[in-house]
Amino acid sequence: MFRNWKEIQKLQPQIISADCEASPEDVNYDCNRIQVLNRHIQNMIDEGLIWSGSYCLWRNGKVFADSAIGTLACEWQGNNAILPNTLFEIQSIGKMITAIAILKLMEDGVLYLGQPVKEWIPEFEEGDFSKITIFHLLTHTSGICALEGSYLQDERRWWEAMDRNDPKGTWISAVVKTGLHAEPGEKWIYSIISYSILGEIIQRATGMEAEEYTQKYIFEPCEMWETHWRKNATAEWLKRYNIANETDLRLAKEFETKGLWALAAPTYPCYPGIPDTAGGEMSTCREMVHLGEMILRDGYYRGNRVIGKKALSLLTTNLLGKNVRDVSFGHNQPILYGAGVPIYSRNMDLEQILSDGTIYHEGAGTSVLLVDKEEDFVAMFQTSFRKEFDWAHRAVKGTASIIWSGIK
Image (cartoon, rainbow, N blue to C red; front, side, top):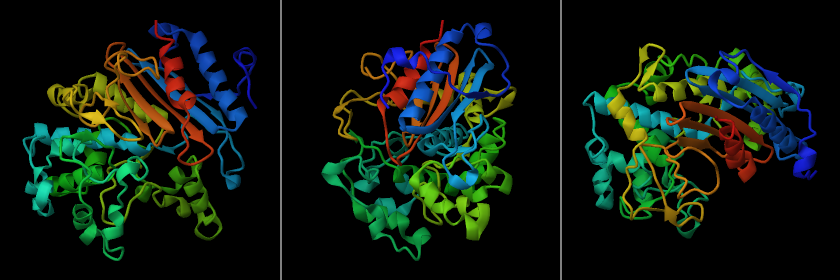
């Protein structure tokens, strides 16, 4: 159902909104652009591109919009409307959270970014793996096995070298056995498993599961009380899950025999015993905005200290040299990248309108967290695609551009 721009202006979306701390006018934001955003989301729903959309917007210390449009996908949920507090999987936005955990340990003197990974994981003594540092893992420049489908010229599957009966004991050696795409520090190649390795380092450095450390020292002080991994779900949280993609729907088919607990299995590529620190946490737009507020308040969330200003600054500092190019997903271009997050530059990114220096991360193309220090602005939104692993510019970059267009 294609509509032109003029036709889209006539849409009347059915919006469900939560209470906010301010109005758009209170924070110098054009409320008319929120109407544009709502019609944009409704149009994509009507076209069959997405099931639903939700967003939370924060500026100058206050949430001024927290809304949802559309329905939940799963039949046994009765096509109920999605709500602002519906829980969804943030996927790779979790990498930003893992990066913050690493930076916390760095400021505590436990590790440092230039530290060879082999000092924590002896399997990395082998060959060029001995050159890999924590910095390389954080910035996707280690050369370690890329996300499946993101580097087709050299496709590798580390899990094929792993003993499925003993994933915990064999996954690291399987990664090493699979080899490298490139010399460490040479290319930016998007890797999920490198962030699982960071999770292993967190575990060995703290004596706690990486997920437990993150929950206690990042989520709790940010008052992200409902943000969690699926394996730690409660029955009440499961009732609020946004079941959207094919993997979720396969799990939902087991609902009649397993009940809600059919949904507690992670959909992010994860095996028992491997740290789930590349993504996969469940959260809401509002709670993710708490994380963005903490970043913009120099590591504090409403009086609670999470991390120091200097350590946190590594998120917003380009850590890559001019010769490092992004070669993932068919790209061959320069990239600005901090500790775990891309950094927007209008001179390099013509796909969206943001402030220079905005940091952000997508989650499987369905959700995005953006943090803009220049405008003291945070946005979290999700657009649940009907087809798993689908991606559309207007749903992701286009939505971000609309949101930023309201800033006065």
